[in-house]
Length: 66
Image (tube, rainbow, N blue to C red; front, top):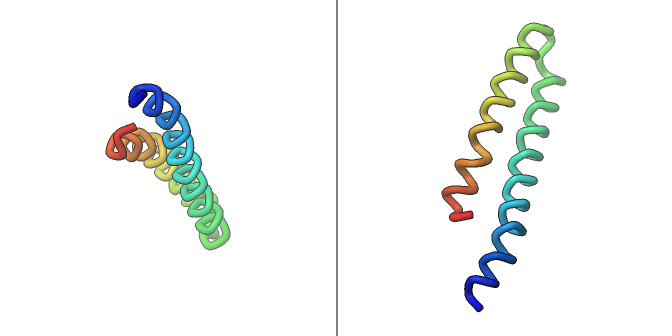
């Protein structure tokens, strides 16, 4: 019974963590987009945020145990 609950709960929690983390990075990117006037800086910041999101999502789900 415990393994069934883990198998059902794992995708739900993992999806929740991924969705919240992505929305956080999108909000940060939108806020920075409005406040940074230079196009080159926007591209650089976007690349850094994308790279951070690429590594942060698996790390957070791993720390949560999912």
